[in-house]
Length: 524
Image (cartoon, rainbow, N blue to C red; front, side):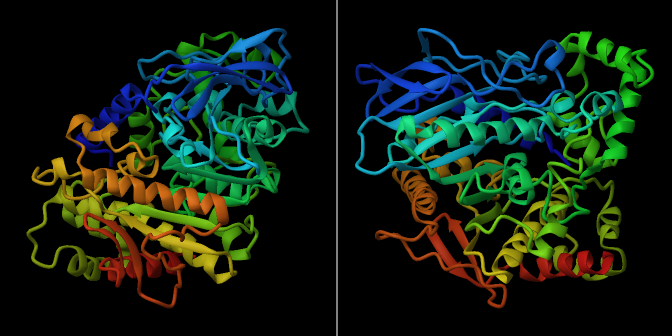
């Protein structure tokens, strides 16, 4: 369920962040860096130097459409990197292109005696929309880390497994081109980040929503092993830590929807000629009917958008579901922060309360007692709570439980802070999907602009400091901040970024999450 107010606030957040400067403009001074593919000219603003629009792979155009990212062609001279590269193809009204495989680096202008930790951000958006310009990294870089973000292919251009592609590249991963782009960016970091003052042995990957799901995918992919040493997952979904919550596509399912989509355009068969015809289609045609809202709606109804497979069990990049990998302890053995927002977004639908509680099967009566004991809750509020618990909140706890079970340092959180300017508005009952990002990136005015208060800035300073410290040491604790206890599945305790600061105590949602846990266990 993607409620209208959720879409509006996510769009507002994206616009607000795009318009917000990442650092004071205090007499820009150009900086020059040499990387494997050539020289770069960045821009200094205040204490941070920014390099935007750096190519990290060959443009995936023409015969390279639906191919894994290839090497960057070296350039001569000095490349100006003062502007973001175009976003990857999507329905959003912004500057976009198939030639979109660029990344950005924010780094402190001051050089340190030792290389700095690196934080690599992966944006969310249901693997159907998103762009790096939304998420400035200067405020985190000012806290002595190197911040990297990358564009990656999405929708039908990013997740597409037409059988002709498998015939063309039988020895390569096929279908998960967006993940392979992210992988190429992580390899680029290993090869080049020293030039920006970063430490390639101290890389933390982090992201929100489908970006958090992408982090999860890299945690279990054998191809990503050794490319990062820490993971932060903010409201991870698509995929989920519960295999049946937002299921991965099998390769056969991905092939079928690709064939059906091609046939809908009058392109039949799976030979080289059909692939040639698909590659000759305008990129604008390939994004029609595949907005993020349409993709999420398709997942909610169980009728996915034709040609949009989402993450694929391709047998190369993804061998199994995250839940199966975690159960067997096959994930990357790295420290983890994971959590969700208290008014997060769920995937699913229900026309009535009875429909909603039937999601629990034999536990419907118990669910009704837990979620709607007086019978006075509205269907919209109930759907938000039930579906968020199902899609994000319980799966985030399950992920934390599995990491702690095998001894990986793990911190589980809930984010419930609401900007002071919004607390008297009755429609703000907590932290909606994605609205923790202004605080973890230390840009709270992205949401409320000139209405930001000292308390808002204090929460942003607190949350971002935990994130930066985690990237620095593998433990979010340090300094004078309140202690954040590691997750212990045997103890009823949740760490909440609340209106009055960081709190730890019994989880008020525990009975609901325990019910979902029993539900998933019984389905196995």
